[in-house]
Image (cartoon, rainbow, N blue to C red):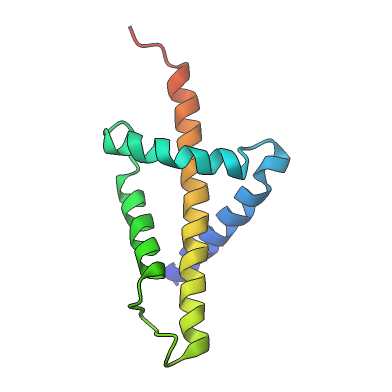
Length: 114
């Protein structure tokens, strides 16, 4: 049940992110260009995205790796489905996390430190 809810949340975030530019939110290009800044800010300890970045890296490695939970060679359709779910989750997570990062950048730049 929890996995279904997480997948539904990822799909919802993906749909929201893809239509956000039309509603005044960050565009896809803005989100993708924020990704290197987000990685750098996380590496420097300024942004709290370490665990999420690790999960995104693991999902990317899973998709590009020849080792799969369900190999395509044996069970073709199910092997493709598990990759599609991983890619969809990854896309939704990247888009929602970059939106969170852009909001963090916006509020951070508004703070005045003395």
